[in-house]
Image (cartoon, rainbow, N blue to C red; front, top):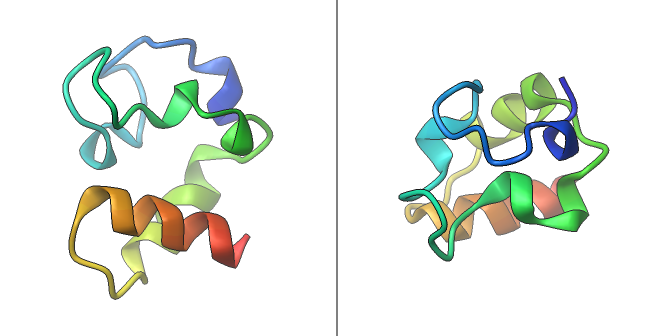
Length: 65
């Protein structure tokens, strides 16, 4: 599923491990830059990221798209 279609259904997606609490600063499906990215593609890039923090991983994924 495309990240843009997740629509804040926290926990009902594959990328929940990379988000923070609902309605917090780290909300991947709320970021327009990821709206057309598939969950599986995001996970593939996130798992190969060498960054440590969630936000750094998210930014690294975006750079590598």
